[in-house]
Amino acid sequence: MAKPDIKTVVQGLTDRAEDLARTLLPNGRRHGHEWRCGSLAGEAGQSLSVNIGPSRPGVWQDFSSVEDKGDAFDLVAKCLFNGDKKQAMAWSISWLGLDDMSPERFKQNRRQAKQRSAERAKLDRKEEAKTRANAKKLWLDASPDILGSPVDLYLKGRGIDISKLEYVPRSIRFASSLREPSNGVCYPAMVTGFNGVDGNFAAVHRTFLHIHPGGHVTKAAVPCPKMVLGRFKGGCIRLWRGEDVNPETGEVKRGASWGKIKGSARLTIVEGIEDGLTVALAAPGRRVAVSVTLGHLAGMLLPKCFTEITIVGDNDDPDSQAATALADAIAGFQRQGRKVFLSRAPEGFKDLNDLLNGNHVHGG
Image (tube, rainbow, N blue to C red):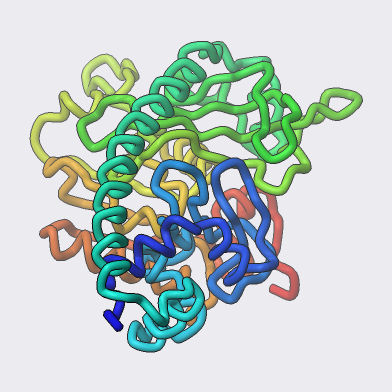
């Protein structure tokens, strides 16, 4: 009997991505084309996402970690065997029912796997183009006039008064009604644009909102009130350009766009939009980018002009995955020859926005 090779096993797991995700992570929940849970331990949550749709099935990532990502076979190894691929191979062969494979069946499986791989790659390209087009339409349909909108009220509820800024960030817009994928209900939303590595539009970040009686606005009570549509690997939200002050007249102007920066420059990177706006209010001269997740921070590709990076980190447990991801990101930027500085809110506050609003960590 022929022994299945790794390509055959990976293809088999990929073809059954949803069954595999449900088997390995039974406490997860389906969100559109993704199976989500808290981590590789399988608890309920949102940080870990496994693609179970027709495009890129089996591809997964834990967004709270830099290293925890891969294909369907990697998911088996990480979930069940602490990364041991030999044990993962044996388990996968048994789970797929490939224990007794004849040479003829082996050759047939190889041919079918190659054909399915080519078809899936073609589908991936079409799906990516379609998603980017949908994301761009969503962005263009949203209103840039956010002053006085529910977005403005939501941010004020977080202690952020954008009317105090010299200009309204162009990266933030308001959508009056967007469909939330997990329940199909439409909500107003804060829509923020992502730029890819090339500077072009890549994706949108949506924060679904709920307008309470009396006008108070908060995040919507849905499993995942913040979601991204589109692929943004290597890119970021270019939230705030900073300010340039004319030394002679004192006139304040919007900072140059990234593509027009001359010489070296400094960049402040935060994880969340609210933290980014908090920085802009406190230090409007700083240029601010948002990574959205710590896992994505290490993969950000930045222009060479940014020779100094300040990362505003949350006060996470030193032994947590988040702390490891932050350390990896810092080391990565330093290997690129950039100076890296780390800033945090004082002890007792999770992040800068909590500091702004006086929200102490429980017990802190």
